[in-house]
Image (tube, rainbow, N blue to C red; front, side, top):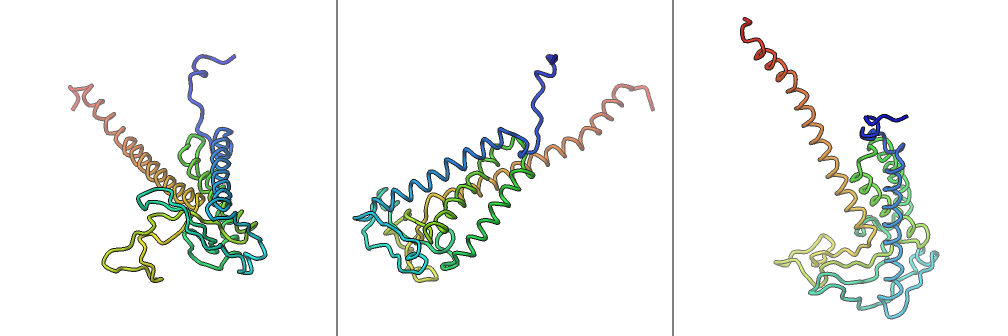
Length: 234
């Protein structure tokens, strides 16, 4: 029979891979994030251009599959966000064009590393870390799906359109736009996930330093109390 003390004791902080709750949080975030990315891409490529854009894998891989000219859709005014269809054969924000197989391999390795970090580096109660890793996995899987099934990543979010850099400044490729890259929901999930993971690492390090400081101060406090309890000694 369980005693009242055992019933009131907090649950142990076990490794995440042994915690059903940790797995639930991770899988939930991955499923929601992956669905949001794939559904938003499918919606954009069906509705943003005048006609639905149907992509054939062989055409995309060979370079024949192109996005027809379209004006895009102004999603947020004034000039905050447009929907504009782009096929990205590189990484986040179009970096490293034409290296599809390399990015597929890198993504698979990154997914394995993320799962290892989740299972052995985080604890069962580290919900912030589990959400962060879930977002990273969702973003990686969303773009991996496009590379394997479409031949390139579907991007459609164009931030700060029609806004140019001041004083005639341009990016190395000659573009004068404030933000010339087009991205997708998966890219957002990757960046938010990595940011949350950095915050978690910072908070964990701060907590560990505070705990170490408290443990170092305890013996000093105990010796002071002992000396105060025997004023006649010495």
